[in-house]
Length: 312
Image 1: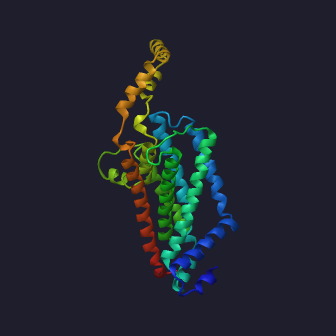
Image 2 (image 1 turned 45 degrees about the vertical axis):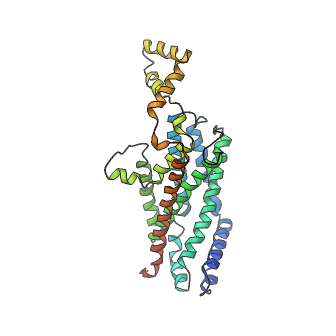
Image 3 (image 1 turned 180 degrees about the horizontal axis):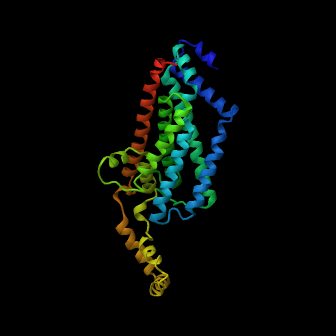
């Protein structure tokens, strides 16, 4: 395949995209590139088991569940392409000197990874539904929650994929790529704004450019976080039920409609403008996620364009 491409000194970009895309799909079939799909299904099942079937029923479950799902998307995206460029860097360098357009090479990977990410999202949603997670019936953008949710997961996964592709374009070995990846994952986890909150300083600026931050906001907005109830107030009381007097209060609350009123009251105090379930907010999140992915792939392409400077 490499020799075939190298002979095409004057082949246009579109033709080169077609050639490389065919190569990627042959690798997927013949070299078991599909092995990552069962892994995606297993991870989705594990997360579904941890989240439970009532993911979209209250604020606490939604926020923590959204963060877990975002982590799955980022994990899938990173593993899709973290090694794809650096492991064949010597071949790319040789073919680039023979007429390969780097933009065509990256373009083929972008198309291929878009399809892979879509497949992973479909598998994940199928697992969530099969497990019994109750999805809302309606959503604000397309009117269909499953479609809005799927678009959100695909954008997160694909943007993470492009970020990993950028790393693969910059580093020179697969070892270096796998060394960098854990640090990238840790940044996504720490600066998501879920485990830790940042209101000022450099940490806030880092948070603003993380996929995990905007991905969690997007999922919570699509699921209309601010319209759900919250168990925070009742849970605060419930944890002290070992005290007989408090146990009697808990029993009384559970027998009456006070429990629902407490959940509504708690929800009012926990509403966040950041999670507003509006079309503009959701589209803003989608746009920022895609922008991060676009910037990443531009940086990766520019770095790979300088491959002829490699000393190896």
